[in-house]
Image 1 (cartoon, rainbow, N blue to C red):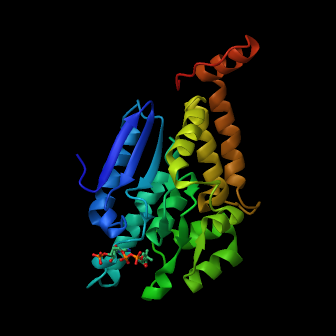
Image 2 (cartoon, rainbow, N blue to C red):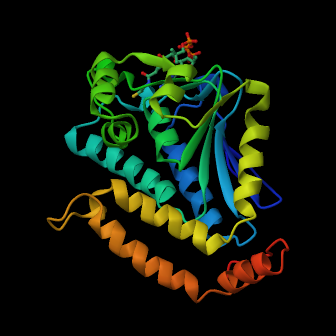
Image 3 (tube, rainbow, N blue to C red):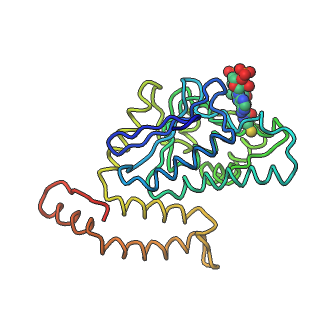
Length: 267
Ligand code: COA
């Protein structure tokens, strides 16, 4: 069905593999178009509980936006390109179904930005992260200046942005950019085992956790003069109430009291 992606659904876990290994999985226009179609599928298919994104081959997750498509763009066209990338990555970030990046090699430029738009990251030992756009006379355009700063702090972020340096998986772990570093051969197993755990939880509650956590670090968290994330606190109160009237809340609390495993339905 897709030319630039491989997808598979297994036991509620949907995998999206960016599949241009000869170009280190660089993100061209077709990849973005197909990523959006895959995200439509994630939204509409109730069999899909969670998603992981990885890259084909053993060398790269994604080595960036496809530099071959940069020629001849004027300012407006370049802005439209950045906007399309940002909109696609907002869809990932705001997905109520968890999206995890399984980073199997270079995650550079748009690849690092794609990984950062995911809800969290599991890295293989050979993963390398960086925003090398300054080497091209450019800056990140798919949210990199914002998410890198949110994830690793301003000093470290600005250093990476203005040196274009790459960091290895161990540094990414130390900086909090990734949650785990595992041998490449174990990357997908580790990712899937985390997803199986998440898939056993109440899906509505999982979605609302993501929504509220996003509000803590987005402009939408809004301060209203009262501090970062005040809008997130208000939304948390409301979402907490919304969970209370779900069937899954009844099932979860009953299962606890009856000392059995809860069977959640996402209702
Ligand atoms: N866009 C388009 N093509 C890319 C690409 C990108 N971002 N990154 C890699 N490729 C292509 C290379 O042009 C090469 O294609 P070719 O075989 O047709 O010449 C192929 O992928 C393999 O890459 P190569 O550079 O030969 O591999 P390497 O092991 O020597 O170096 C990298 C790996 C990742 C260090 C290097 O490819 C690189 O610096 N890529 C660009 C990273 C970048 O600047 N990303 C931000 C873009 S905004």
